[in-house]
Image (cartoon, rainbow, N blue to C red; front, side, top):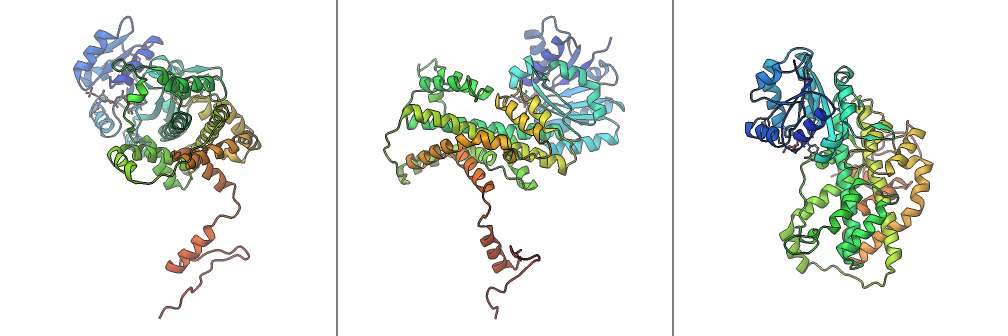
Length: 470
Ligand code: NBP
């Protein structure tokens, strides 16, 4: 009797995904580079599930029914290539490899190309939801050929998170579409996390609120339009006490944010494709700046930051913060979706944005009530990926823009950096501006480099001799 599927990589994600798959009734072979991890997993976590450990790749592959379906949950980058190369001698045409890690989409495209020559099918599948999601139902973003997807569709739909709109898994699109969408998902995730951190900063520094009080506000917001996984964990975080000091744990955590690269890739790719994503970019910058702790400590003693003493109405300010946060979150999603749409056209992914929003509704880190509204906008005008172009968005943002402006101004007056919120506002203003000062940029370019310019009053390409060259 052969097993239905195999999984390689038994760190947190792999273990939980294997348990999820087995609990949905599929028999699964598991393998990990370091055998002790496999042993520990089956001894400690596997009970009645049909999970079978293997300690060499040959017998792992031989234990699988054909065509073989093998999920990789190993560290992104070289380890994925290493595993593929180790597997290849045992695979046959028609077998399928699914990379469930956070692989860079260009690596996925290359792997699909290389494996196609060997007639091995390949899916690049974004998996979101952390370890809890992997176990209880993640959001799954598989991309590759339809043929490859069909081989595992039934299983993926079963293990994915469920919402009233169905399982949080769909065939995202061709080639590396799945990993592209997961990358942008992470870029949006960075931005929302930073936006929440910014409103937290205003509450603690301007309103002198305690972590518990901020937690209460976050919880109230989570019951409203801001309802989301990230809001939910944020209020839970605010309430957690440090066992050693008895203080709120968040207050003893060092303010240096780490990153693994997916946010940076989103920004780099947006720059390559020429799509503006300043709020997603600023979230990466904010993490980078946070890393210079020693420098910040020193400069905080020398750089003048004029601060005004303000008398503020707490309730009004909290209402403004809620709306400003909604504004920022909406703008972050709109930037990410525009980027996905552009990539879909450039790389022929054929991505359905409404489906992407649907599968983000459950299981994943950026699941949010707001996604329903975003889907309505996209469905109304599927040809226009820029959410800001819709009347619904105009109406939604109308009462939030003033709040966002007030909070941004407050940041300036109190010296609180609001990198994401400010960038969301400036992005909004820039797109809402008929005449940008780019005319001067063009003149400057033409002045020093004869780069030419277009005119507003007639067709053609023009160059001016700005200074006589001797
Ligand atoms: P890690 O990203 O920490 O990777 C650890 C796993 O990779 C272990 O099984 C390790 O085996 C294996 N591995 C390494 Br490292 N180098 C290898 C190599 N050269 N050959 C074979 N195996 C190798 O694990 P994770 O946090 O479970 O994440 C797995 C994937 O899922 C990653 O791509 C990650 O980015 C992605 N992801 C993670 C999360 C999350 O919340 N953690 C969420 C969504 C997606 P070993 O035991 O022998 O060292």
